[in-house]
Length: 285
Ligand SMILES: [Zn+2]
Image 1: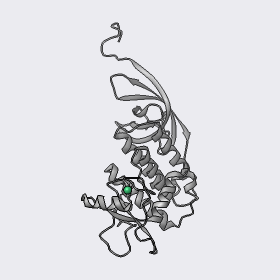
Image 2: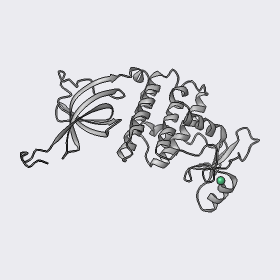
Image 3: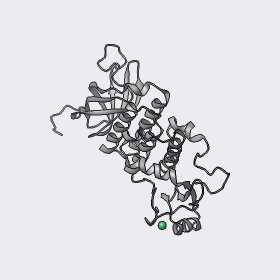
Image 4: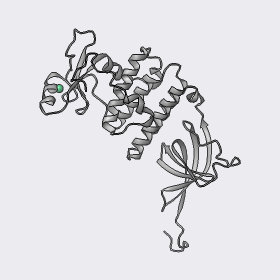
C-alpha cells in the first residue's frame, strides 16, 4: 500500500458481474444488505444504500429468483461491499404463479445459500441454480421431478452423489433382493453412499451401519434425474406420486449428507418416508 495514502482509507476495487440473490436483510430505515452469488466472484455481501426509497435506482431490482447485473465497490479491509449499479437481467415471473413453483424456487435458493455459506462456492453452483430457476420458470407441470434433479446434481457437484445403479463400495452390479415382487427393491445405505451389492450389504450391516432397501424404480428415476438436463425433467411424464417419491429420496439423502434441511422443505420431509415398504418393516433406510 502506498505510504502517501491518508490514514484510515484502504484501497477499493470495482467489480461487476451477474448475481442471484441468496439473502436480503433490511438495514436501517431504507437500506438493504444482500448476499449474492456470482459466477466469477463467488458469494459476495453488499450494502444497497437507500434500496427501499421509491426513487432509488435499486428500488424493485433486488428481488428473489431474478438474474441481476451488478457492479460494486469492495474495500480490501471489509467483507461488505457497496452496491453501485444494479439492473434486472432476467425476471422469472412464472415462479410466483403457484405456491408449489414458488416453494421449489425457494428450495433452490435456500440450498444454494447453504452450500455456498459452507464455503463450497464456485461457478458451477451459480450455473446450476440459474438453470434450475429457468427450468422451474418454464415448467408446465408440477416441480417435483425437476427439484429432485436439482438436488441430485447439487450433491454431485459436492462430490456426494448417491450410487444409484451399481454398488457404492465396489462398483459391481447391485441386484434387487426381491426381483420377483411387485416392487423390486435393492439394498441401500445412505451413510455408505448408495446402493450396495449383496457382499457389501452384508459387510456394511456387519460393521454396525444401517442397511435398508429402496425401490429399484425410484433409484432408476433418480439416476435419470441426475443425468438429464433439468429442463427435460418437466417432460419426464412420471405419475405425480412417482415424482414425489423420487424427490423424497433425493431430499432425505441430501438432508443426511448436508446435515441441514431447507425451511421450504421442512413440511415435505416431516412426512413419513414415502419409499418405505408398504407393510411396516424395520429395514427401510
Ligand atoms: Zn459391492
